[in-house]
Amino acid sequence: MVKTRSQFVCQSCGSVYTKWSGKCEACGEWNTITEEAVDATPKGMTVGKGRALELVTLSGTIEELARRTTGMLELDRVLGGGLVAGSAILIGGDPGIGKSTLLLQAVAALAKSGLKTVYISGEESVSQVRLRAQRLGHDKAEVELASATSVRDIISSFDRPDAPDVLVIDSIQTMYVDNVESAPGTVSQVRAASHELIKLAKKRSIALFLVGHVTKDGQIAGPRVLEHMVDTVLYFEGERGHQFRILRAVKNRFGGTDEIGVFEMGDGGLSEVTNPSALFLSEREGEISGSAVFAGMEGSRPMLLEVQALVNTSGMANPRRAVVGWDSARLSMILAVLESRCGIQMSDKEVYLNVAGGLKVSEPAADLAVAAALVSALTHMPLPLRTVVFGEIGLSGEVRQVGRTEPRLKEAEKLGFEKAYLPGKTKIKGVQIGMHAIHHVDDLVALFRSSARKVAAES
Ligand code: TYD
Ligand code: MG
Image 1 (cartoon, rainbow, N blue to C red):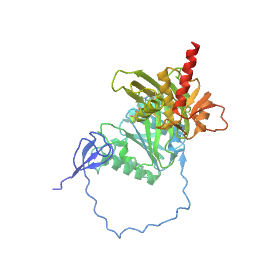
Image 2: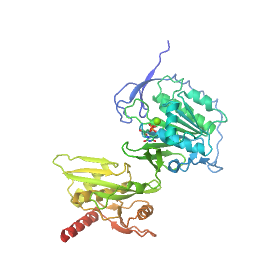
Image 3: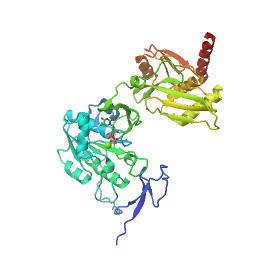
Image 4: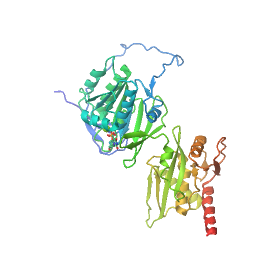
């Protein structure tokens, strides 16, 4: 009798173990390791039967990429300027964040531009997808639809000369390949199904969208196990309670990776946000303490965001620190710099920091804006009206230059800002905005002290 061997695979990162354990050593996730059957070991290859490779030089003719715009500017931007035929795109994100909505809207727009588009749903019935299309006002779009989960059926249907231009698989975790023993959603199935579908996409020049749910509990394989197989990896992020959704490119063989697309989820589905700064700042009140406007960059696009801070005296030995939308380690660093370089006592204070609008900021250039919001919250002194802030803070308290000063200032100017607190030695031509150099965090603190003195003198 042939004994089926089994192995233990982490459903988050795909690491393989010979025995079960509670924690994956490779990615650090808990309870993500499950047992899977091993496929028969491939037979050893005999050398000498292969064909000699034809080698070429680096210079030579380059095939031009056939790019099609998707009809959604924000999606085109993260794709690097449009959809490339024969490319595989993974869209990952939490369940319910709006991946199916986004792709249904995208295929409807692509169908309108004359492409042959197919939407395969493995999660929802045809009626459910139709209902959503109706809600989105796309029920007249010429999108071909099927509810299916067998990769063999999908390949038999589309491995032909009149293959569709665009194929959406929603989601890859529901697909199964019948010669792999594991259940759908396991690492082996997700990998095998993606491999077959990507092969089809390359052979027939289909632009393939794979939807991948991100899971924390390890019941189904996460998109991370197939990031290396696809050409482009996009993550759809956002807070459930917020209407903003950010589509972020984390890998792109056909474009830059730091681009983001901004959408707003409403009753009629996702709408594109072409001027995010105006929207992120729209609920900002006038002069209030604990708030600073950060002139940031997301990819090639400048974006103004409000950083809010709240500082409270705490009776606890370990005062609470809570951060939304920024790195908590970075916050600790700024607090330490303020305390040890500027003599501002922070270790006995509760600190809350929030980037308004639900966007995650990862740029070190936000340091100075965070410091300004913190000092402003602590002193109850608002920053001057219509002022933006940016700059990186070093451990000795020095404020360092950051890249792309010009687009930051231009965006601020466009939105009616009149002054910028920025690192020293900045010369930018063609902007009217007043530049106030901050060389050291001390300079920033001094500004608050002098306005506090002014207020005291006036009262
Ligand atoms: P969905 O696209 O199904 O998410 P995913 O495919 O990532 O799991 O989006 C589901 C959520 O979006 C659901 O909670 C309802 C909301 N939604 C709207 O707010 N407006 C709409 O027009 C649609 C279609 C969905
Ligand atoms: Mg869905």
